[in-house]
Length: 259
Length: 259
Image (tube, rainbow over all chains, first blue to last red; front, side):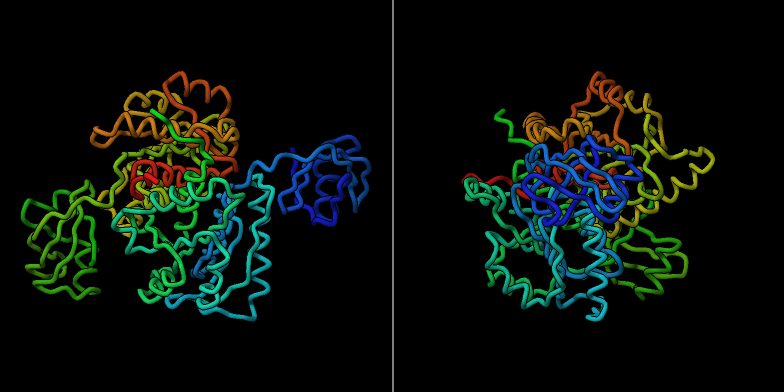
């Protein structure tokens, strides 16, 4: 069934209205008519099944039949802090990370960030990143569009650590030993089993990795170093790879065998 | 330290020789001279530390100092069977899957494969896919270049199932229930704990998913249906996502907490 993300003000308790591109899509492409159903998501976690009541060029009105269970969201709220990579790699990180269930993205600048960051282009890039997140959220049938935050500096990122229940700092030097990440995550799962949706910050470095001082500063600020296994992952692969492990540990692929 | 993949015939028990592009790279770019060390991998799992003994334009000769532990390979040998996706997406699957530790790739054609497959272009595409696998293997510090097999048909793929210890069939309909994959993998880990390097076939469908008849045929041929969680993943994301879960379960990120 067709899914649309709508702004919260387009949805009341009982009705929903599609406007703009979505109205044109439902009217002209899908040839929607009164009585036809669709799914509307407010992007904040509320998905509803709605039946069309009226169709015109600029607005499709519908009655909400029922609220759907919030089934496609990960039980851990994982914010991906990604050191700004070269070229359009952040677009890949946002697209794939959204598919993989990330809750939000926080791009940041670190010592070895290679790109020249241009403040003046920021608004335009943010718009593009948000569009990619919205499209990936629709495509992967999520009920929430991950928030894309403005690029911040390293000190500012460190200052955010306290807002999370755990900060996972992906550190290559730790990864080579091949130990620990699973132990950390299983411990976290046990500690937070009764919490609602614990907040995780996943910190991924740039192409050249983190500087040792940064790793030390992160640990001092409360982060746990984790390795992502024995192979060297590209910066644009790391977040997706880690998100899969987090979803796995959070129980999204079912529980463990007792065998 | 610089790493080079060499053909098995370039490496004896005691010596290794770099030729062609690798010799030019070590000679001109790295300015290697007698006594300098490098790492050579035969692509079959043997990595050696070698010291240069002689340098000329077409060949760099070196003595092997010692064989290095085969540390960057996954303990499960995972062959990714990917239904041929549109455009250059198979290149993404091979690049990221190699980083993630895949043992081999078997592209295949299924009922809903959208691409027009052209036999005549096969040799050229295979060459390109193999080049991508080699580069990704070097970049991720693997000691093995994954084998890229020629594209095969669905029936031929079914016929290969018997060669593996387990066949995991990624099936969206199974995924929505969010159950089972972890149970399947944990059971497999327990059963194969004492085996050397068990063989896994991971079967990923095309853009439009598998036809229900294909899912039935796969199960009849011995495959286990698994879901990759609650969100709909793009075909080019699925293998990487699943490989991360397999590496996690195979123990690559350490063992579990007893807490």
